[in-house]
Image (cartoon, rainbow, N blue to C red; front, side):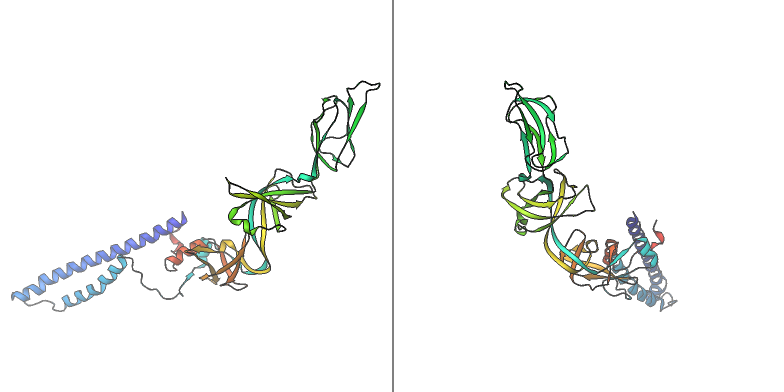
Length: 365
């Protein structure tokens, strides 16, 4: 709305100036007509002497000066305005506040070139086990519950066989591995049969992220590559992982290949089924000159920023390097400590396109 008001104010100023020029031109033509009728023609036909022989000369000279300027203005030809270097926009303090400009210093910091992948957390195939019985019978005792941490060979369940005996034979099933019981499918007194899964146990100290890589990015992924994992549940935490496997098959529908990333889960914060954002580290620098990516404008295959020098903002072409989710490396165009605009740079670009002169804030709402 603010930009529309400014454009409307500028258009009003232009239309008023055109109207004034046209009114002046009409008055001038009227004066020339009267001069020819009253001064020139009577003299030519000998009826009277010219009242003011120089008046017509003055009027014609003024018209010669007026009409080229009016024609150029009406057709959008821009007159050169001195006072500002090419590529600069100069703002008053009031205008800076009006468009809420914000700047940041270019500085050196660690930076990594990332490849972002969407994925899902799953259990490691070799770190989970089912518990079932080999006989038919009734459950007479339960020693573990859902969510319990169990050790190897810890008793889980006792089943009394249906075979004849006095007393009938019983069997105790023990945990085949250490981990957490994440599923329990049995109750006390329940009749069970062979191969019925009674418990599921998993070791969650390490999990895998199964992420999808598009085929055009597949050459960037290598086994052993470091990865940074983030989940919605803990937006301020980053979990470190490593590429363990690039699966051999490509999905013909999505044109993606699954990549498995092993991630440590010693604090048990990650859960199977969580969606993740996995950033593979393709390149890394311990000290790169960076600015926020929001400061960079790209048009016509050119990248530039607006550099602040007092109340003047220079449009500076830059050459960029690697980038992560928030920052971009600057290879050429800026030096450490220089201030660049991160908010309001689009408005500055609009002003730059119109000659570096923003509209006055007086008419803005």
